[in-house]
Image 1 (cartoon, rainbow, N blue to C red):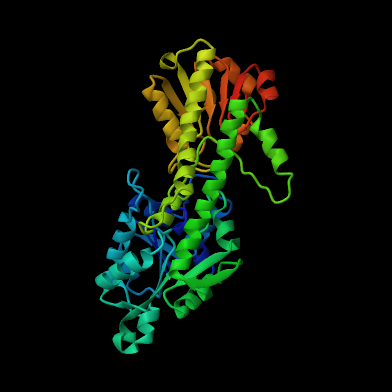
Image 2 (image 1 turned 90 degrees about the horizontal axis):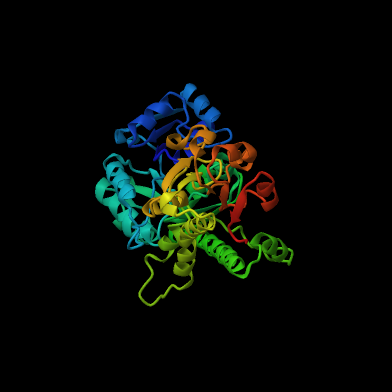
Length: 438
C-alpha cells in the first residue's frame, strides 16, 4: 500500500493499515515531515488519542516508512491519495493543484491491476472529468469503467487499473476513532472496483461500507458537509437575532431542542477547517446553468460573516469602556479552527486578528497547540484591553480569570464560543460580551 499525502487523513490511514499488517509506504512533498515520521514522531501537534503511539509502533516495527520519491509506488497493489482540494477564494471553484500534481507524478509509476483510491473530497463529476483522464494519460493504462466492461475488446486487461472514490470522514481530535467507526461510502468506477475497496477497508473499518458509483460517493460527501453548514448558519443567524432582541440564544437553543426532532446546533465565532468552508462550493461547482443555488451561498455568507461580527462586538465593548480600537491592545485566544487541535486551515481567528489590525489595534495571539502562538498566557495578555475567546480549548475553559485580571489593563472579555457564564466572569471582575446574548 502506498498512501500519497501524509496529513490529517493520510497519516492515520497509513498507520492503521500498517498496524493491520500491510506493508505501507507514505509519500509526501514535505521532506521535514517525512523525516519526522521516519523517526517515529507524530507531526500533528493537537490532541490525537492513540496516534503518536501508533506512529511510533508501526515505524519501529518496520511496517511504515515515508518518502518523497514517487518511484516507491511502482510495485504498489493499492494506492490511496489524500491531498487537499481547496476552492479559489474569489471564484469558489475547485483548485486541484495538489491532486493534479499527485496524479501526474503517480502516473508513470502506476502498474496494471493497481487499485487507486481517492480519499480527497471532490466536486461531483471530478472522478470522470479529472482523475480518470489524467491518470490514463500519464500512465498509458486504462481505468476499468462500466462502459469499458461492456466492450471488452477496447480494454486490454493487462493494461488497466481499478479506480475508486472513498471520501474520508475524519475530524481533528478523533482521527483514529472516526476512521475505524464511521460509516463509509465506497464509490467504484465499476462494481468490481467498489467490492475490492470494500474488502480492503474492512481491515480497519468497523462501520458500514456502502458500495456505490463514483458520482454518488462525490455527492454524499459534499452534500453532508453542505447540510451541516446550513444548520450552523441557522444557529448563527438565531444568535444574531437574539442579540438584536436582547435575548440569550443559549437558553433559547436549549428549550428549542426539547421539542422532538429538533436539534439546533451551537452558534459560534466562525466556521473553519479544510472541509465545511469549501465542500458546499464543491457540491455545486459542476452544476449546469439551469441550476440556481440559493440556500448554500446564503449559508456560506452567514457563516463567513461571524468573525467580522466578533470584531464588531469587540469594538463595541471597547467603546463602552471609553477605548478607541485604534489605541487598544487585544488578545485573540485560540488560532486553530477546532478545540484541542493544531489545525489552522481557514481559521476564523485569522480573520479576526487581521481585521483588528486593519482597524489599528495591537493584536497578540495565543494558542496552546499552534507552535508559533504558544507561550505563557499571562505574559501574552499582559497590558491588554480585551480578550477575545475564539476557540473552546480545554485550557481556556479552565482559565484563571482572577489571576489574568491582574495582568490585563482592562477586564473586557469577548466570548465567541460560550466558554464562560456571565456570573463566573462577573465574579472574577470581568465584563463579559458573549455571542448571542446581551
